Length: 338
Image (cartoon, rainbow, N blue to C red; front, side, top):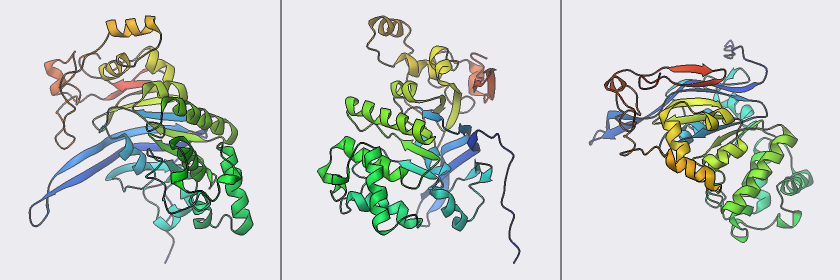
């Protein structure tokens, strides 16, 4: 049998991953025969690029599709449609046997540092799982590598034989970071990696991630709803609403001069310790009415129009297209502001 040519696309040298029109629709099944009566459109046409050694943040309210997007790009979920390219190679079309070779270059840090660690496994076993699966180290070399990784994340060799319940939340998340680093990845998906931690511990873990990025040249896809965290760690921001992208661009441009009404509403709600900034945000606060619509029955036209303070009748019928307003800064060109 002749080998099938592996799908490859032309890509910029500094682009590590390119996501094109990604969709993830979960079927809704009912009745005795479990017939499909609809779909939850969790991710509905998302496109972005992650550059080598940079951090791209996915932000938005709970339920907007951030985590589903992260799992689709790693093929932990099989997307309904769209493409994901890693260094020009299709992640969607390759066989699972080939995907295994790529997996060691793509890792994930989960939100909950306790439930993501098997309580019956020691730190040595938890961190070395990837090394064993990919035949990267065994015996004493495995132990030495895990000890080196623990040192990199601020733990020590003395912790090798401890179990998750013997660590604090911040320490457990450091074990999660060490586990992600074990296979020398190029990209790490951080799925709400600091949201379960105290604020002071969040800062320590964020500083650790930034130091590791500088030292190892890592790229991050950082999934979060905390915009203060985004401003600190991200180079670029993608704002999602109800499964679609409404704005994306460089972090400072997004924060200093947002375009889309939804982005403006999110930023106006960010707390600040600076009284002048806090007063300015309070004066310009954008109040959103109602709840996020169901992704199984999204609104027609602009999906944000049911909550947008500037909505016009045209917004309910015209689906906005992503348009570049400034170099590298684009947004869904809704009729109410385009």
